[in-house]
Image (cartoon, rainbow, N blue to C red; front, top):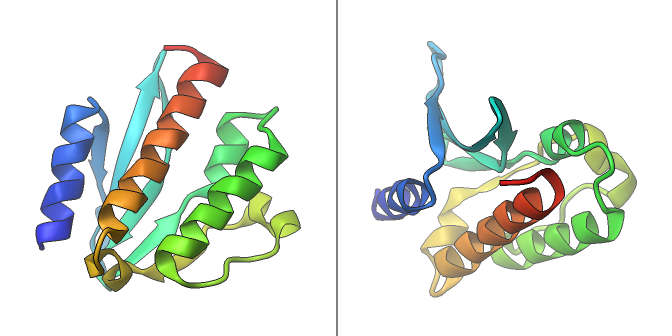
Length: 129
């Protein structure tokens, strides 16, 4: 719960739009960056204690996305979550899930939010804002 509140506070400070899922079986929320009426995905959080990394939607929203940048973001997520993610060539169609419990480990939540900041900075640079 503490990590979720920290994430929601972070999203508020960044002026992100938080979308709440409407699922009957599981709950979710998505902090989204909005620019010119378009929503840009970062990650989603699920009531089954997972974080879904929204690579698929990063590719959809930024068609000329830098593959090297994606690889670096993937590597950083792998370090935070101490878990391998799908191969680089598959990320375009994937939203891999990782355990939220990793964010409870020392410094991991700060590292995670730093990655999200990096994604926001990339979106701002590539799309505008």
